[in-house]
Length: 234
Image (cartoon, rainbow, N blue to C red):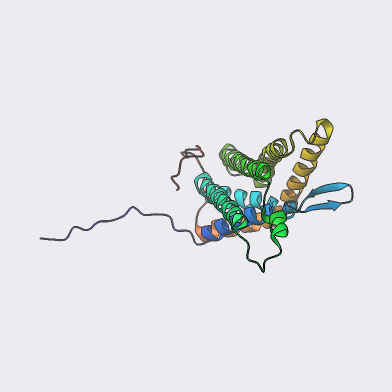
């Protein structure tokens, strides 16, 4: 009797996708931790997360432009899942009995004891904004035939960040900020994030060019299932 040879379907193996995925997860978790501190630039007040969070959209742009929407979707859900895991662990540690030698419980709670409303706002804003950003970029790439990369990157980020900032503000500060104050908060946050995207365009161009050449991929999402809940990649 001859042995039956079983072959598996060939999968795309990319050298750098896992690194970008790791950066995406780290940026989301770090930005949520440092967001507990308010910082000011003259009359502009924002949270510490503003320093690093815009990079998550730049990474989302890179993933979508190079690997396609399905790989960006995988990174979005992975980042979302690990952020939830981090919040659960932080909360469990907070609730555990403190050792007699531990005298910093209030400090721990102040930094890592996220307010549930803020956590909900952050997670909802991230998932909606990131999917909007990736969807718009993938569609614009098809419509433009891959041309005008700068326009596609800025446009998709502007739309995604507007959704992100608006959702976060409405969930986190509804009832606390009103009228023009709420609009001002949203606009300042949105403009800052879009400006970061524009400033980082030269680096984004270099990274995207390097990855396309190194990974031998330049995905166009002609036949992609754009449902956020479709898990297949490739």
